[in-house]
Image (cartoon, rainbow, N blue to C red; front, side):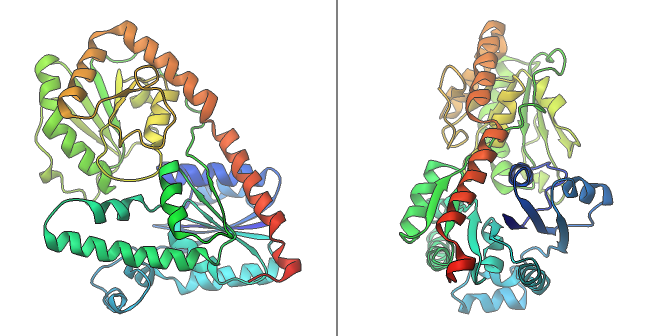
Length: 404
């Protein structure tokens, strides 16, 4: 088949969760199909990065991405529209044009819109099977349900209702849709029509690249692998430093916490000033830091999907302590493959226990690695996605049937 893949993120280097997912799905699709990629990029794309994707994509085209500006004229007009303000403000005429040209010239069998941002460029295309990849609804839904001031709750509730209505109308134009977890599937089923094929394609890990072979772990080291530029990561680290870290340091005065990921534009003054904490900034390769840590933590408060940071830690042989939200969407056995601790005291206690017990760390490390090998390798998950796309295309032969 000829597949046109529309991406919100330029997938090389695959250095955040979205890029990692897109990169591996593209590779698996390209094993048996011709794939053309049109992608947004937040900044200039190096020639070497473009070449890396051209190794398996027939065509790679890049469009500059303009982030959402809440006070722009288009965003303000969005208050009067049925579409979310972010969709109106970030809409790209160049992306629309290139998508149309590609479909006319190549007569693709399938167009895949990766994430909700890309859906408008695929939804109205005629004569081609349309798949929405990685629909994410949990964050706006949870904001609408979260406690807080009346004005905040009212605004979040209105935002969710508007987005839900928009997604409901949008999904009626797609033949297939994927989500990353059962929780997301439940939300999506409330909004999608009966005709659409909906399936769970979880996040995964590159088992060849992530191996527990990075040298001797450094004593009493804890890692949080996630860029603070992403709001749920920032909130998780602030919660950890405020509610959990003091008890860990009191019990293990030599404990060290490393927080990886970009810091550009992050309000660091809102984080507690804590002893033993290092913010590494962006790392070209996070594996050595994670692989040499004694424990990885995921105390998330918000956000949807499945946690790549957990899967990568387990693949690298690093035991994980998370709360239920942090481990949401993952099929892992608590107490054997991962430690789950819900309140701050229990979280700190679990961390201190692991730091003090080398045998327990070794058992959790071995079980965690086996879990990801069995359930979360990208080759298998990418193969499932490819099979899903093929099935949707087979059932909806748009070119021959002239579907709308």
